Image 1 (tube, one colour):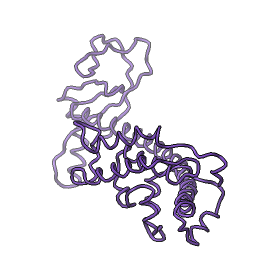
Image 2: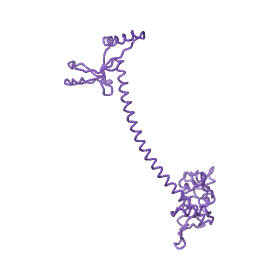
Image 3: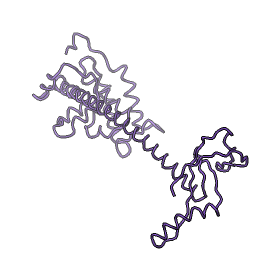
Length: 288
């Protein structure tokens, strides 16, 4: 049966105990005559004719009051009085309130997430625009290299170069490799290989930061009008790339871990030569 609000008026009985789990709480204060709690009395009725079931439902609570012991329990901060079967429904009532509170909190969280998603979408749009601009910069790096160092710039390269006045001064193997993917991607793979010593497809598989830095360093020097590398610089770079390609099952990136290998020695030989084998070009000779 549904819970009924009960008002406690007689506080003269000092033996009243309120059960909270395995603990006992003292009775309410003597002057607290407005304290109310929910009274829940639940019984079971036999199945039968409709009228008989209705009459049985009316008689059963009175019988339960005479035969069953009533208990007062604190369920998550709320007081309930009833028989054991009724008190089992008290948890259900409190659980429903807790569930409603959780749903309300979740709704607020979803609303907050919607705001964050909207903000992130704006940021992604901004980053996409920035990435497009950076890709154009990288296109110009390769096209300018073809014009200035390989003397093989096409009309498309000239259009790319003329599309802006910003210049990329160094290599970026990872992003440049992406320029060769998808419909409309670059097709001048040989220019990329002269810059980075590998094909775009090979570079896309690289995850090793130190290896990528070597490729970028080489590209930054070979494409530059402001610095030049010696024959030793280019020779050591080629030796490193060739050994790296042949290491293990190919492109083994663990050469700086564990025991030194030929790739390890080639890596350090190239890195250590940079300070002596790369020189600045005089300003009069290096004009854009």
